[in-house]
Image 1 (cartoon, rainbow, N blue to C red):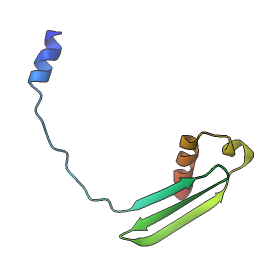
Image 2 (image 1 turned 180 degrees about the horizontal axis):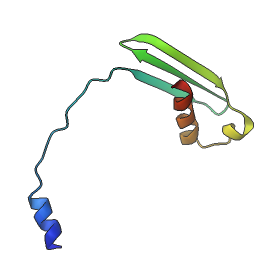
Image 3 (image 1 turned 90 degrees about the vertical axis):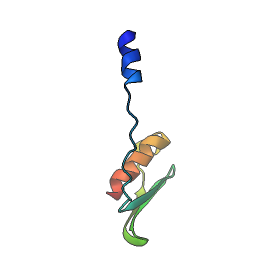
Length: 73
């Protein structure tokens, strides 16, 4: 435990560098379909949309959102 205490006391705080985003992707993964948009400086770069098959429609919302991101890329 002394090792942990020493490490915590020696901890030096640092601020993470903030880098402005270059593009923004917005997704929606409804139970029956998905959609995504890719924007750069408020200009629409790409749009993707489609419907899920029966197996995909049964996935959790988190899994569908990840798939919607992948489809948007």
